[in-house]
Image 1 (cartoon, chains in turn red, cyan):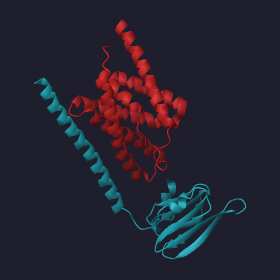
Image 2 (cartoon, chains in turn red, green; image 1 turned 30 degrees about the horizontal axis):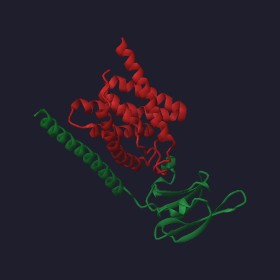
Image 3 (spheres, rainbow over the protein chains, first blue to last red; image 1 turned 90 degrees about the vertical axis):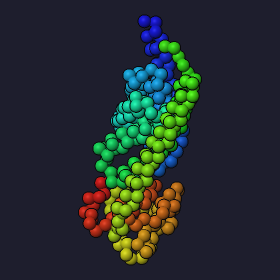
Image 4 (cartoon, rainbow over the protein chains, first blue to last red; image 1 turned 135 degrees about the vertical axis):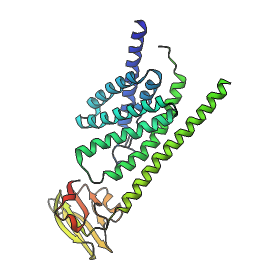
Length: 166
Length: 135
């Protein structure tokens, strides 16, 4: 029982860490204003950490709470649709790659970032039926790969250092 | 011994990571090439103001036109069509993004001047009815 309480408290704290990271990202100037959606994805550091230290169920829970609060604070229903599609696909891909156990956190994170962007583009195609989405997709796949490398390295550093016995 | 094994396993994982990143980037490059091959030279430069088509110029002629907008006709963008390409030569908008934009010639490409609500879009003969304008 005590263990469970400890875990819930910890997950609550780490959810707020993810929120702060999302806030930091929201107030940073856009990396390249002409192409919206290019982001480092800082909150994904937290998601990767939970995925490795706790498991996919807890990662999904924290991710879901984060998405909802971020949409309420900084976004709207549209951004919620985009980010939910991205987050679900991303977590799915990361869980599978982690299970396969032939990639490090960096590889898992790269696949997660690219999956996140592809999920968002899938929603964009459904909602907008845009013709120029092809270029957008390629840009986001490339930037997602780069962002995934950084997030994977950061996540790895935290997973190594923070070893909670919960 | 265990440590050595772990190290080699880590090395293997890092190698896999690199392969993964390379494959993803390769697919992206292949996609880019494929899209460039599918590019077709357009036939018209269509000028839209506030989303409504105002002028249509053939890319085969060489013209320089002033697009005048604003309530008191105070905004001027100079559009040049030369050698089958269209570009914005001058504009009195504050950001100048449209002037910095490279010349456009392929179907679907566009130059946007947000402050003056002007869009110059390349269209081909096949989609004159504007089927492609949904974007």
